[in-house]
Image (cartoon, rainbow, N blue to C red; front, side, top):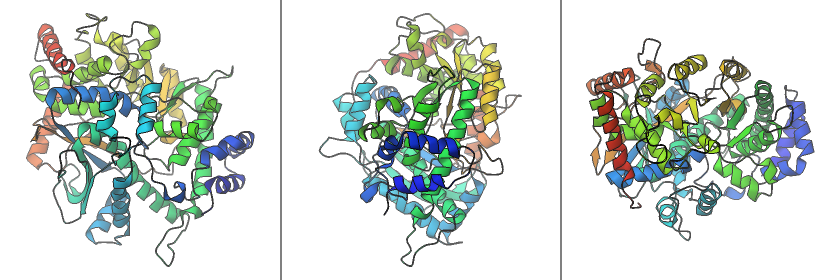
Length: 580
């Protein structure tokens, strides 16, 4: 098959889209860099010669920075196991996949999904990349034992998953057959949340192992649906041997997406905001991720030439660009915050504490665990270190988080006695309105930077800048999203969340939940409510009621008792030193 580099250049030269001239100019000026960047790929967007993607691919930098907090949890509680589940929010594709799985339509879509995800058994952990990342960014708790636990030994690397099961006739989730294994399981069951039957796509295993499936699995699902849609749009049909020639459309798609990236960077430059490239899931592939990185690193600059680029979330594209010989000045550094995963898992483990408090105190415990165990190392007295400590408050609504956090102080270390909110460098808005989030932060006296990470269209950047944000993080907006520049288009929306948590073989009685921002009246928005849809109606109703209580966050303890509970639970997690 022809290399992607030549096909991409040919496709780009034929485009008349807005942004095409600037895109062509970049490719011409940095011709050698673009060639090096695209050299690993065939014209269909896959790695050449059938080389498998590494396990690191489609995992964000926050996975590396968050792992020390996960390990602290495992050392305290023992065997912590999680199940991540894909939620295909795009109603049409959710229906098409279901019908393909149960025999109501052509089985091809379901077959391709199974083929793609079963291939994760042959996706090896690239231990040397993990070692480089840990060393380059000074990541704590990434010694040999952690690398062994996550990646396996250098001579015999672990694969991303060890077990795969897919059966449309199965109607209940399975668990791995072996203690150290990660299982991807596809089955069909009723979703009590959606009130319909659907295909469940889940990954289960020990937390420090299965966490690497969250976005990898979602990207696998997205890739199948993305390629199905693109083949239809570009009029590609299967060959007589039932094979797809994605080289017939992928170079044109990549060139068109790159033009969107050029426009999006220009829109960002106009606002003066500093931004991070949050790429690596719901994307057309690693080739675009690498192109996005070198272009944004080059072009995302203010009028005086100073960089506005905070970095890229893609660890794999960072190191693949360097290994391809790209000038390090054109390769964005790795950057990221942390994720709802941490709050959701710790919320399940510390459910009794939340219930006693009547507030999600577990979320603040999770943030402070990150503060002490990850990059901040419990010390942000130097102003330059403040950016190492992010806040993602909207798991059960940001108001609930802020109510709890504003009542608590740091219990130990150089910041002992200081308000929890005073050690936060930036608050990340991830749902709800930009202005409403800013007003909420002002209400609670938060003076750190604000980061907007719900950037869908150029106006979102303008609004963020106008109301006082200094930072943003954007993924699809930087090229993948057609809707970003054409509101008549729709994106294939999906998400992955933790649905079940087990400790030493027993399922946690507190079910993981994510609500996002609540309504103005404080009520959970049904469309954002994430919980285990396999639960019976009565149990799911109880989960929703409990989530509403925590989202309302009316304290059941006085300030002293709440602080004591917080100190106790955080202390338990900080107190153990054994490695997995």
